[in-house]
Image 1 (tube, one colour):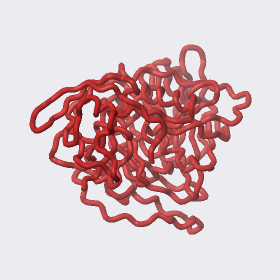
Image 2 (spheres, rainbow, N blue to C red):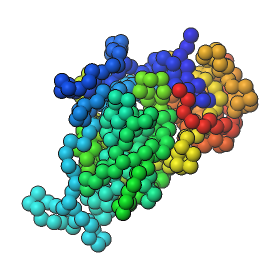
Image 3 (cartoon, rainbow, N blue to C red):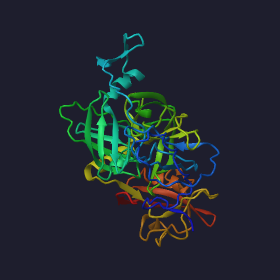
Image 4 (cartoon, rainbow, N blue to C red):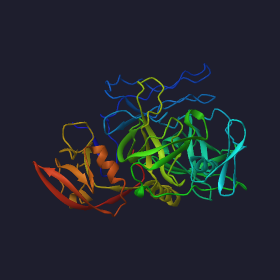
Amino acid sequence: MSTENDGGTGRPPEEPVPTRPDAPPSLPTPPASPPSSSSSSPPPPPAPTGSWTYPAPPPPPPPPRRRTGLIAAVAALTLVAGGAGGAIGYLAADTADSASETSGPSSTVNTATGERTERPPESVAGIAEAALPSVVTITAEGNGEGGTGTGFVYDEEGHIMTNHHVVAPAESGGTLAVTFSDGETYEAELVGGAQGYDVAILRLDDAGDRDLQPLPMGNSDDVAVGDTTVAIGAPYGLSGTVTTGIVSAKHRPVASSDGSGAASYLSALQTDASINPGNSGGPLLDSSGAVIGVNSAIQSSSALGQPAGSIGLGFAIPINQALRVAQDLIETGEPVYAILGVSVDMRESGTAGAQIPTEGSQGSEPVVEDGPADKAGLRPGDVITKFGDRLIDSGPTLISEIWTYEPGDTVELTYRRNGEEHTATVTLDSRVGDSN
């Protein structure tokens, strides 16, 4: 029986064949560390071109157990969120930059000799100086797991945007702490998380008289390949790290799973700005300093079981999608997903496209009765090859594209039936909340 993913409800594959066991294990921990309760995974098949990773970070003191996870790109490689339960590095040192300050229309930065040099605001130094006070390190702990990641100030009400996998350890009664670039730390609460989108919103419990400075938001739809990017985060615990690059691709389909059965699907911005474990949830900025994406994943050439790092292939959630998700989370605490109302085969196969299986999973119908696909005339066995203006080469690619739309949007799709090509127009339905 085929392994399937419900393209209508977004249910993750029961046995995600494209994913490979497991993330690289954490680095050795001191004897005081509690033993991990995770079971061993079967050996993975060889990956001819490396592995997709959010590589495993060094454990924070005191070292909690880590939940490592699987992340597969549609290219059938493995992507690993540095402890996909949120263990993505930790703050190893005080990174407050008390010597940096803003003066007039330019930025003041320190040179190696201690001299202060003016930098124009449109320079990388100027962009970094303006953005760093709004970028935070997030520490999440709960259920014997823990880790840290990056986030950034979303609004003046104390909301912080980050990745869902960063805060996952604290989802069920854990604790969250947010540390700013000046070293000040605040407790925070989880407003809501969208596992499918890999977006989460926190709120500071009591910001006091802190002057919160939301980062300006860009328009990811206007981004072009070759545009300059600036990534800020805490790779390997090194808070306030700034790297630069370009947008190297758009609409890169990436599917991820933490091994618990839940999955995320991204139509991502790809960048060659250096992104490493700990950058997850941090901002990807454009040349004006506006946020165009939320850093989420990297591809690494390291072998399984070895620490991994950037090779110039990083992936970010487009900010336009993240903003829509954030608004839903702030208003209701729940994400809203566009759905097509079909199951699709998630396995690698020689069929170009996303195939609707002839049988559903666990007794469900492969095409939901009276759902968008059913009303458009799609049937079991059809292969969807185009959705909107995007070519579809697999089930994960289809889902990542569906989730770039909003419920109620009308989309033209192309499908193949018995060797013949057909087109249909669908009006997407909605689902509230993550399905597990």
